[in-house]
Image (cartoon, helix red, strand yellow):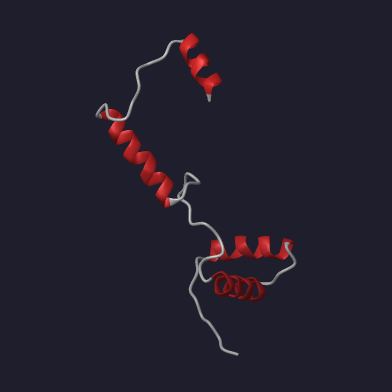
Amino acid sequence: MSNIQIRVDEKEKKAAKVIFEKLGLDMSSAIKLFLKQTTLRKGLPFLLTTENGLTLEEEAEIIKASSEAKRGKNVSNELNKKEAVKYLKSL
């Protein structure tokens, strides 16, 4: 068995400790669980998301589409209400 020492923000540590305790875990067990899941999945056991709840790829896609739309690329003509309803029903 080996030891790991890490520096963390005290406020974050306390907030995580409260959550772990509600789950019936202590800090050490929670970190061991994280490490075990990382090795089982051969990667992080959760998605990395931005503050918007999107993956980095999804956010990049939206930024690209927004940039294209501003240049008039890959956009369709504006539909009136009747046309929009017809289009949605055709999907």
